[in-house]
Length: 172
Image (cartoon, rainbow, N blue to C red; front, side, top):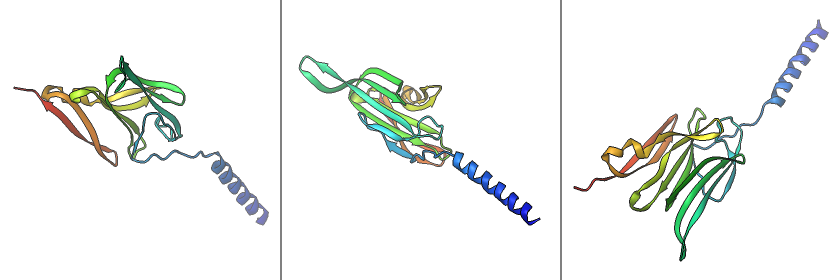
Protein backbone atom coordinates (compact mmCIF):
# COMPACT_ATOMS: atom_id res chain seq x y z
CA UNK A 1 0.00 0.00 0.00
CA UNK A 2 2.86 2.35 0.73
CA UNK A 3 4.29 1.88 -2.80
CA UNK A 4 0.88 2.54 -4.33
CA UNK A 5 0.53 5.75 -2.36
CA UNK A 6 4.02 6.92 -3.43
CA UNK A 7 3.22 6.11 -7.06
CA UNK A 8 -0.06 8.02 -6.81
CA UNK A 9 1.67 11.07 -5.27
CA UNK A 10 4.37 10.96 -7.99
CA UNK A 11 1.70 10.85 -10.71
CA UNK A 12 -0.13 13.83 -9.19
CA UNK A 13 3.10 15.85 -8.88
CA UNK A 14 4.03 15.00 -12.46
CA UNK A 15 0.61 16.15 -13.64
CA UNK A 16 0.89 19.41 -11.69
CA UNK A 17 4.35 20.09 -13.14
CA UNK A 18 3.21 19.30 -16.69
CA UNK A 19 0.24 21.66 -16.44
CA UNK A 20 2.35 24.36 -14.79
CA UNK A 21 5.05 24.20 -17.46
CA UNK A 22 2.48 24.45 -20.25
CA UNK A 23 0.88 27.61 -18.85
CA UNK A 24 1.85 30.81 -20.62
CA UNK A 25 2.40 34.24 -19.16
CA UNK A 26 -0.36 36.75 -19.80
CA UNK A 27 0.15 40.40 -20.62
CA UNK A 28 -1.40 42.45 -17.83
CA UNK A 29 -2.36 45.83 -19.24
CA UNK A 30 -2.81 48.80 -16.94
CA UNK A 31 -6.32 50.30 -17.03
CA UNK A 32 -5.01 53.19 -19.14
CA UNK A 33 -1.80 53.81 -21.04
CA UNK A 34 -0.92 56.57 -23.52
CA UNK A 35 0.58 55.29 -26.77
CA UNK A 36 2.77 57.88 -28.47
CA UNK A 37 3.38 57.96 -32.22
CA UNK A 38 6.80 56.83 -33.37
CA UNK A 39 7.35 54.41 -30.49
CA UNK A 40 7.16 50.63 -30.56
CA UNK A 41 5.29 49.00 -27.68
CA UNK A 42 5.87 45.32 -26.94
CA UNK A 43 4.38 44.74 -23.50
CA UNK A 44 0.66 45.43 -23.99
CA UNK A 45 -2.14 43.16 -25.19
CA UNK A 46 -4.34 44.89 -27.78
CA UNK A 47 -5.68 41.74 -29.47
CA UNK A 48 -7.35 40.41 -26.31
CA UNK A 49 -5.61 37.02 -26.43
CA UNK A 50 -3.65 37.60 -23.22
CA UNK A 51 -0.29 37.72 -25.04
CA UNK A 52 1.86 40.85 -25.42
CA UNK A 53 1.60 42.39 -28.89
CA UNK A 54 3.83 44.72 -30.88
CA UNK A 55 1.99 48.02 -31.38
CA UNK A 56 3.27 50.86 -33.58
CA UNK A 57 1.48 54.15 -34.23
CA UNK A 58 2.94 56.30 -36.99
CA UNK A 59 2.05 59.70 -38.43
CA UNK A 60 2.87 61.25 -41.78
CA UNK A 61 3.78 64.93 -41.75
CA UNK A 62 1.93 67.10 -44.25
CA UNK A 63 4.25 69.31 -46.31
CA UNK A 64 3.34 72.61 -47.92
CA UNK A 65 5.51 74.68 -50.24
CA UNK A 66 7.20 76.28 -47.26
CA UNK A 67 7.94 72.94 -45.57
CA UNK A 68 6.48 71.21 -42.54
CA UNK A 69 3.76 73.24 -40.84
CA UNK A 70 2.81 71.15 -37.80
CA UNK A 71 0.02 69.45 -39.69
CA UNK A 72 -0.28 65.69 -40.18
CA UNK A 73 -1.90 63.84 -43.04
CA UNK A 74 -1.98 60.17 -42.36
CA UNK A 75 -2.10 57.88 -39.36
CA UNK A 76 -1.24 54.19 -39.27
CA UNK A 77 -1.68 51.66 -36.48
CA UNK A 78 0.17 48.36 -36.83
CA UNK A 79 -0.22 45.33 -34.58
CA UNK A 80 2.31 42.49 -34.77
CA UNK A 81 3.71 43.83 -38.05
CA UNK A 82 0.32 44.15 -39.80
CA UNK A 83 -1.43 47.45 -40.51
CA UNK A 84 -4.81 47.32 -38.77
CA UNK A 85 -5.96 50.95 -39.09
CA UNK A 86 -5.29 53.81 -41.49
CA UNK A 87 -6.45 57.41 -41.63
CA UNK A 88 -5.55 59.70 -44.53
CA UNK A 89 -7.23 62.93 -43.39
CA UNK A 90 -5.47 66.07 -42.19
CA UNK A 91 -5.24 66.73 -38.44
CA UNK A 92 -3.20 68.82 -36.00
CA UNK A 93 -3.55 66.98 -32.71
CA UNK A 94 -3.43 63.26 -31.96
CA UNK A 95 -4.11 61.38 -28.76
CA UNK A 96 -4.04 57.57 -28.63
CA UNK A 97 -4.63 55.55 -25.47
CA UNK A 98 -5.06 51.88 -24.72
CA UNK A 99 -7.83 51.21 -22.19
CA UNK A 100 -8.33 47.77 -20.64
CA UNK A 101 -11.38 46.83 -18.61
CA UNK A 102 -11.24 44.51 -15.61
CA UNK A 103 -12.60 41.68 -17.76
CA UNK A 104 -9.46 41.98 -19.93
CA UNK A 105 -11.14 43.57 -22.97
CA UNK A 106 -8.78 46.17 -24.52
CA UNK A 107 -9.94 49.25 -26.45
CA UNK A 108 -7.84 51.74 -28.42
CA UNK A 109 -8.96 55.37 -28.14
CA UNK A 110 -8.04 57.53 -31.14
CA UNK A 111 -8.62 61.30 -31.20
CA UNK A 112 -7.33 63.13 -34.28
CA UNK A 113 -8.48 66.75 -34.21
CA UNK A 114 -8.09 69.49 -36.79
CA UNK A 115 -8.58 73.26 -36.51
CA UNK A 116 -11.45 74.72 -34.48
CA UNK A 117 -11.93 71.30 -32.89
CA UNK A 118 -12.96 69.84 -36.22
CA UNK A 119 -12.88 66.11 -35.70
CA UNK A 120 -11.10 63.84 -38.13
CA UNK A 121 -11.45 60.73 -35.95
CA UNK A 122 -12.61 60.34 -32.37
CA UNK A 123 -13.67 56.95 -31.13
CA UNK A 124 -13.05 53.68 -29.37
CA UNK A 125 -11.73 50.77 -31.41
CA UNK A 126 -11.43 47.07 -30.67
CA UNK A 127 -9.16 44.57 -32.40
CA UNK A 128 -11.29 41.94 -34.16
CA UNK A 129 -10.52 39.61 -37.07
CA UNK A 130 -7.14 41.21 -37.78
CA UNK A 131 -8.32 44.84 -37.87
CA UNK A 132 -9.37 47.64 -35.56
CA UNK A 133 -13.16 47.93 -35.65
CA UNK A 134 -14.81 51.10 -34.41
CA UNK A 135 -17.04 50.38 -31.41
CA UNK A 136 -18.09 53.97 -30.66
CA UNK A 137 -17.80 57.00 -32.95
CA UNK A 138 -17.89 59.88 -30.46
CA UNK A 139 -18.19 62.37 -33.31
CA UNK A 140 -21.54 60.91 -34.43
CA UNK A 141 -23.00 60.50 -30.95
CA UNK A 142 -23.45 64.26 -30.36
CA UNK A 143 -23.68 65.41 -34.01
CA UNK A 144 -27.09 67.12 -33.58
CA UNK A 145 -25.81 69.31 -30.73
CA UNK A 146 -23.25 71.33 -32.67
CA UNK A 147 -19.97 71.13 -34.50
CA UNK A 148 -16.60 69.80 -33.43
CA UNK A 149 -17.93 66.95 -31.35
CA UNK A 150 -15.31 64.93 -29.54
CA UNK A 151 -14.89 63.06 -26.30
CA UNK A 152 -12.23 62.09 -23.81
CA UNK A 153 -12.32 59.01 -21.65
CA UNK A 154 -12.23 60.40 -18.15
CA UNK A 155 -11.52 57.17 -16.27
CA UNK A 156 -11.79 53.40 -16.31
CA UNK A 157 -13.30 51.65 -13.31
CA UNK A 158 -14.08 47.95 -13.44
CA UNK A 159 -15.77 47.24 -16.75
CA UNK A 160 -16.95 50.83 -17.25
CA UNK A 161 -15.47 53.72 -19.24
CA UNK A 162 -16.65 57.20 -18.21
CA UNK A 163 -16.58 59.73 -21.04
CA UNK A 164 -16.64 63.56 -21.18
CA UNK A 165 -18.15 65.08 -24.35
CA UNK A 166 -17.10 68.39 -25.87
CA UNK A 167 -19.34 70.15 -28.38
CA UNK A 168 -19.06 73.58 -30.00
CA UNK A 169 -22.68 74.83 -30.15
CA UNK A 170 -24.13 76.09 -33.41
CA UNK A 171 -23.99 79.86 -33.91
CA UNK A 172 -27.30 81.69 -33.87
